[in-house]
Every structure is written in C-alpha cells, then in structure tokens.
Length: 231
Image (tube, rainbow, N blue to C red; front, side, top):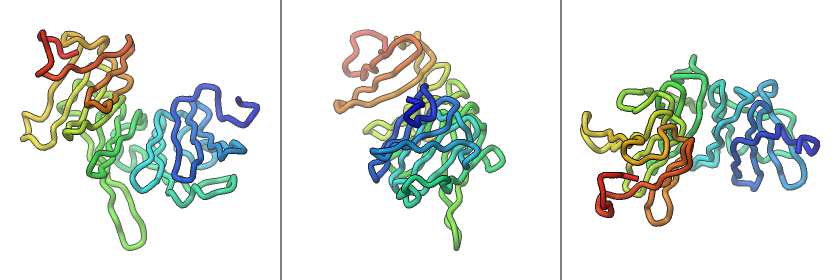
C-alpha cells in the first residue's frame, strides 16, 4: 500500500531486475522498488523522465528501460546495487533527443538485441552508439505501414515476425521481406474481438494471444483455419 511506501495504488507494470529487486510502475506516482524489506520511490523530481510509467523493460544487459508519458529513462544495471539510494542515475531521452513522441507505451527487445519502442506517434527502433567515453542512443522512427500511429504492444514470434498492437488493429512486420511486402494487417473483420490492442503474447506452442478492449483473441495459423477468419 501507499502506507508501506508504494508510489501509488494504480500499479501499471512490474519488472524484476538481475539482483532480485521488484520494480513497480505507477500511474502518476513514479516507480517504486522493493528489495525484499523496504520500498523506495523515484519520481520526476528525483531524476525520472515522467511519473506515469506505462512499461518497464529489462534488456539483455540487465539495464532497465522505463516507458513514461514524458519519454524514456534508462537505468544501468550497476546502479541497481543500491541500499536505498535517495537518487539514481537515470539517463533520460525525449523528443529533443530524437523520440517521435513524449508518450512511450511499451518497449521490446528482439532476438538480435534491438530495442523497439511503441509511442503515440509510431514505432521507434533504438540503436546504441558507442563513443570513446559513453554510450548514447539513436532513434529511427516510422509510422509508415502501421495500421495506426499509436503503438501499445510489441512482440516477436519464434519465426522472427514482429507483431505490433495499435489503437486500430494489429500489424505484423517481416523485416526480411522487401519494402511493400513487409506488412500484414488484422482487425475486427478478421475476427479480432476489438481493434484497440492492449497486450500481446506468444505461448509455448507458438500461438499468438491478443488482449483488447473487449476481451482477447487467439491467432489461428493458416494451416489450421476452417474459415476465412484469422482469429
């Protein structure tokens, strides 16, 4: 509860770091971290880019990416070995650094280690640029080919296909195909329960589950369909 030190009662996302700490993003109160004994809360006033936390990604290096309503904050893994530090060295990125929009809904790292961000103005592919004394991020942004510019969920299936949930349907992206053939689209006319997508999951059998504003749908592979419906 808030009395115990939680940032807010509306917890939007959870993530565990490599040291076992649990990070809890809230809707308006910043992010809290629980080390097994105590809660510590970090807000915009303490270095976070924004107080509305939409998603938290732990990447392959163990670094954390906080998706907020004011850009993203990245926290190096080594900084998480703390004993309740009053401030943390968040590195923040916003529109002025190349993001397409301040509101970042989700972050996903693909099989090649590339981080993708879903924003209010399309998809952003993040490239890490190493200089002599530091690492910085470069953002390649696009909303061309998407069914809607607001991207709320991203996953990659076992075949390397990116599934992109938006506010107006589902887009799949095959980066191995030539331009003009990379994108496929699905909406309620294909059997989706709703066009506004909130979450995506591939299960251990390779099935894609889609959470929407009106329940959920399961994608049916072509070879298993008995109608023209995809879900």
